[in-house]
Length: 403
Image 1 (tube, rainbow, N blue to C red):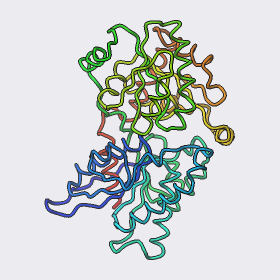
Image 2 (cartoon, rainbow, N blue to C red; image 1 turned 90 degrees about the horizontal axis):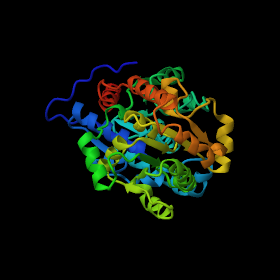
Image 3 (cartoon, rainbow, N blue to C red; image 1 turned 30 degrees about the horizontal axis):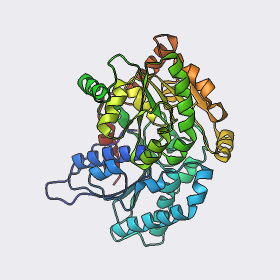
Image 4 (cartoon, rainbow, N blue to C red; image 1 turned 180 degrees about the vertical axis):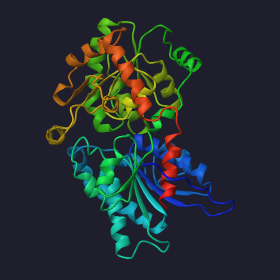
């Protein structure tokens, strides 16, 4: 479904008011690109809500720190349930008080959709503000093709319109009664470091030009890092036995940087930790191989054509329950979008260093495994819209067309 063209308001006209909620680093990137797109098409747009540093850089003043929402899994959420419930009510009240033209929740459905339902209920009760009905939009379609297909029908009770990142998702949303536009994934147009930046990065961190560089990416949430960091360390130590000259770079984000530094300080060979967007871009462009947690990071690696191994585990209760509900045989987005199984993944009980290290070793040198991934990564980027209009602009056009 393609969004109709939108005409920007005349100079001096009051722009639309948009309330956005993001709950983690990937949503912050989506939100920042969306805000930039909205400002391009509707220069007078007002934005409020909850976001991270990238959305803040686009002018959003976050209601409270986004990192409070960066929890995942049933077992992980339980200790913070009361705090999260209070934040849900606070976000809904703030949204209603501002009476925006649209409420856009970005990924993080456990939080965002609860806010959507409170806002919808308030409007149904006649307390939704004085400027008319708030259009309710969710950015990132729920993966109903993977597990819990009933989520789409449940979401449709609170959401009018969905912005989908993957090309095969609109029919699932439309079947549940919502409108949906495929807007592409922002990873296809995010800036990538050039050769000069890569050389400067290696020089700044004393990495020889020909030294193999491996990315360690144990996640952007504290629970992920605490479960995966030690396993990643051991996996990479086993790989070092085969590739002794390799260097390890560990990009991190604001919410877990302190934990990452504390945990990696105990690694036998300390990784190079990078935090700035510039260093992260250079590290991804310079990398020869990656060991990563499951998530959208696989698409960032694909955009930079970095062969990868995916490893992930959850708390025992979450692992059992989600394992019972999962409908697909892979959770890696590169595998799903390319319709291949080129990227090896080690999930749950299979997330063990003795299994992960050989898969990494198979990707060190040119060969069938590496060639298959290179082909799958190129196809993934093509299907996600590489070379076309920026997804943030497409998403903004879709939003404005629904107001």
